Figure 1 (spheres, one colour):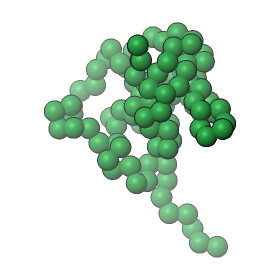
Figure 2 (cartoon, rainbow, N blue to C red; figure 1 turned 135 degrees about the horizontal axis):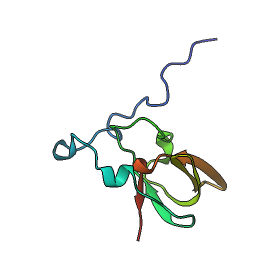
Figure 3 (cartoon, one colour; figure 1 turned 90 degrees about the vertical axis):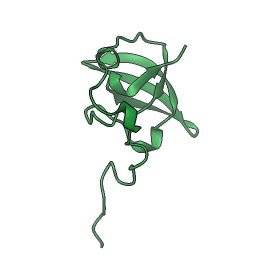
Length: 97
């Protein structure tokens, strides 16, 4: 058997990179945002924060907030025919109107 090469963030150079003008300090508003169950959110990763990040396959998908778990949220998304639940920090979630 061969050894597995790479980890969770393998091949994510373009996904995990911010534009030059947005680099620097994080927005506290997005870091501390409060969400309610049933709200629709888009999964957009914040490269400066590794805590509570999801797997790269789900980047850009839209999900529904299910419940709050500590400082993170449980988000339900549709992946093919299956419904999956992700535990995501609010800094990686963008509220949809």
